Image (cartoon, rainbow, N blue to C red; front, side, top):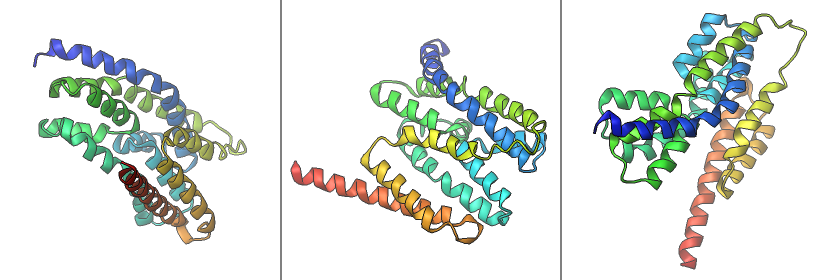
Amino acid sequence: MSSTTSKPAYWKGVRHGAPFILMVAPFALLFGVFAVESGLNIIETITFSVAVFAGASQFTALQMMQENAPTLVVLISALAVNLRLVMYSASLTPYLGSAGPWQRALVAYFTVDQSYACSLQEFELNPQMTLQQRLAYFTGVLTPIVPVWYGATLLGALAGARIPEEWTIDFALPICFLAMVAPLLRTPAHIVAALTAAGISLFAAAVPYSLGLVVAGLAGMIAGAQTELWMARRGEQRA
């Protein structure tokens, strides 16, 4: 596979990934602000974004750190939020699993909601794509997103250090989460999972160290999985 034939796939990925800048930029900007407000310095904030590169998990860890939760609880909560990435990786394996070790490592690091959603749809629509074309497309999707994520995080951290403490902007965090989650509610199972998790989280709000969030997340995943099973069985009975 020559690099020439991979170029169209790469630029197609760039075109598909570019619109996500509108969502990634304010999200990363907000993370930078909250990270500094939570006590991290600018270097720690940037290192956090580069090392983790998973917005929802980063915000979850930050929220736990603000509540002085133990380190183990912070790690468990962040991992629980990122469990969906395990399913993402499993579904991409048939298309990218034959890549070399360092390529698979990079794909694993850069597998996020945007790169996964675009890549899976493109690979399913074009099963004739070669491995190099798939890798080129995956890279193309990330090309406009990754620099914006790092750059906006830095801008947010620089701005956060200059925002007066009396300017309370905590309300922006749940709003940001809602804006991120709402477009993902595409099936009845998604909706059931979200409503279950939201409901359980209200009843579990008094659980120490915000572990109610983990309980609510697990309950939501179970409810969503059961809904999918119920719908699949119902479809088989009708067939």
